[in-house]
Image (cartoon, rainbow, N blue to C red; front, side, top):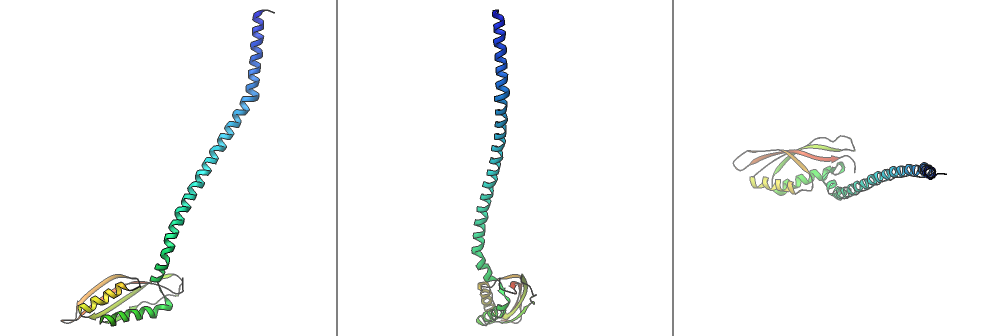
Amino acid sequence: MTHNRKIIIILAVAAVLSAGILILGVFPLMNSVRTLTTEVYDKRVKLATVVKEQENFIVLSKNFDNVSSQIQSLDSLIVKSNESLTFISALERYADEAGVTIDLDLAELEASNEIQIVPVALQASGTFQHILSFVQKLDASPYYLLVTTVRMSRLADDTLEILVQGNTYWVEKEL
């Protein structure tokens, strides 16, 4: 055999072996690497989603803790229907302590378990100091009265009349 022919045979065998290695070894491994890369990417996306959900849960948990600590104080601002006489008596007591006379007008409550906005109108008359004392007692009371209108007028030299309209929050049954 000639020397050129041996080189051609060796190169042909080397090419066949290289093609065999590529076809039987490298290409399947490349497919496996692609599959693994896709799976790793999917897992990373899923992990990022889980981490984000956990962060959201932590934030929500903190917000819930903040709100739940305020629920009791907010609950005390809502007048329960079975405590309506206590609310009215407190308003009358504030008026007596301040030395004013009042007329109280409350809207009727609907039969509902929902928190209801109940319009309140207080008309008080007395001296300026007495009315000022009454308004201060209303402001310091444990009941929440969202004042929407205040009107003051003079009845006589010493006597003033004040009309306070607003809303309070009631619930028919215990929350």
